[in-house]
Image (tube, rainbow, N blue to C red):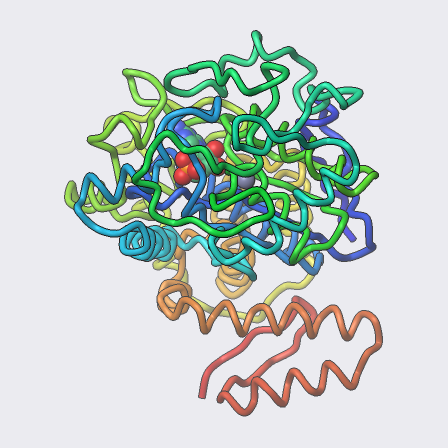
Length: 468
Ligand code: AMP
Ligand code: ZN
């Protein structure tokens, strides 16, 4: 396996990424709260997480990635006060919460398709897992980390040795996470305690409620991610992703409740994407008038221009959005595609050159996901003295990570969406099976794909496929 160095919010340094089980990565992504369209800031996070996942697969890992859809429990203030964002969204549009959730979840995935963001292997709406939250909260009671007060169930942060393990800072220093109003909840024993289960909502309009040992109510936002991750990925997690605003309190609380329930460490690597800001500050769904993929389209931008814009800068630096800088990305993107389209597929692939540049690409992107240096290697390929077939093979190879639709057939495949993902997932699994000398499974996969009209072609550079 190639070495991959990645910044870890938990250790506050760049270190070698080493999953718990060799060759396999369990990855969890905090999904969208589906009460409104995703703005292009949210999508910056999802684009960079997509590159991260694809790069892990590219260097040979078998990745299982899970994402939740927050359709209940995320209140307008991170301090557990305010209205459920979903209820507010439903009221705004005169619809039910489930109608709102379905509409904006579909819209989110359409945006993802337009941006060539692959769907995670598992997508789990929060409302699907009520049983799992209840079981986890019961475990927290059993282990002495939960209490009831004023009708709600709270997590008792005073029982932890280090609540601030992820940030190394106290709440007062963590302004980034504090959104909207922070109205104190008098039921909390300690200011940092947070709600696991709401029964006393001051809003009678809470539409979705479930029975629980503590009364009819609904789950808190944080418990969703811990329970959904454990449901699909087990007791240990290799990699957890989100935007920087998730660090506190959301991820801090996820760690607190997961480790308190499990009785051991939980997630070893935390990946956070810095925010996209506009000139007036951080983009936020609740501010209204949000900048979406549709707005970019209306203004004549291919959504992949925005993907290019994101890849040109480092995920750990705040990025300021302006149409002038987007225009620069547009010009660069169009020029890049034109140069690639002008390459004639001639000669045979020069394996030595191919491997040399592939290694450069891995070295650059593998240094804390430096996508802009990854693009530099792509430009180097276009300038280099090598035949057309080798250049195009490298462009296709790099674009399996960058996903900029740089060659005509990739664009067509990307539009095939889910089928392409399905085929690629099986091809990756087959590569792993072959590595493990599990020939039976490898043959089984070839046969399964064959039935669907997919023809595999193996070469030194890996496996390519065509559809009959
Ligand atoms: P939400 O739908 O509000 O739950 O957020 C979805 C994802 O977008 C989360 O991972 C957030 O951390 C992330 N996010 C929110 N605002 C921004 C922003 N301005 N730039 C980048 N990521 C963001
Ligand atoms: Zn989450």
